[in-house]
Image 1 (cartoon, rainbow, N blue to C red):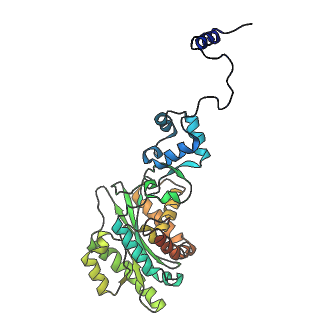
Image 2 (image 1 turned 90 degrees about the vertical axis):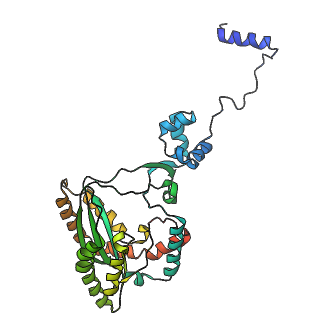
Image 3 (image 1 turned 120 degrees about the vertical axis):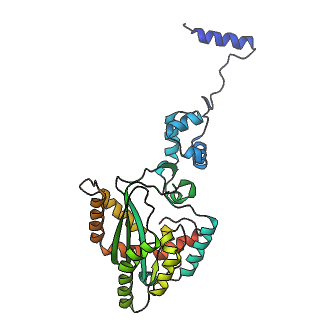
Length: 317
């Protein structure tokens, strides 16, 4: 009978310690896992630092194998996603947003069709900004504050687009080229290049069609809320809807920018200059079908409902 030296040493050690040589009952044998699958997934989910780590970094931090990390997280439906980019909301922002939602919760789709949606959009010449990944569950968790990536301005070469629409009707578009260090339009430039020659004729035309004044949505950009701009609105009988800061999810035109940027990125030829980018953007804008605009307006009652449900916090829009 051949017995290994390791087994002999183990028997001798047991005899010295006065232990029995009989086999113990086999039950929960083997090394106990350092972390159960559910515990590991919960720990990664609840810790914002761990949720940002790669599988390799998690394995090193938690002292387990990469394979266990992959298996346990997949078993608990924890996947790595790009962070959704949303503006930061203070308590005051949330309170104002909730008040606005309560004031408009009785509006139907026809009422929202009589709003002119305006906004600006920046498109980078050399493609989109980098995205960040985050570990989370699928579904509504993507809108949680810890899973968002805040947006900040930069001075890369780009163009700014101003455009508007009402209901299913596409409005005019205005493009302004931005270069290194350019901070944007002043209030006087905003009035002379956009409000007076572009918005005013469209507003008067649409008001005449429906027979009463429309409301216009514009965000809280400096040029929009200046005293000079507000005075121009009063003098030209342009009715502005009260708007809250950091609320792009409530402006229906914001979603058009995503569609436009996707079409720009899918353009069959490489865009090398700002002039070419402007030309392509204008072509795409003019080609957008009316159903894009009308479908976005139809989401407004649901946006208001979601805003109330989230107590003025971020929504999925």
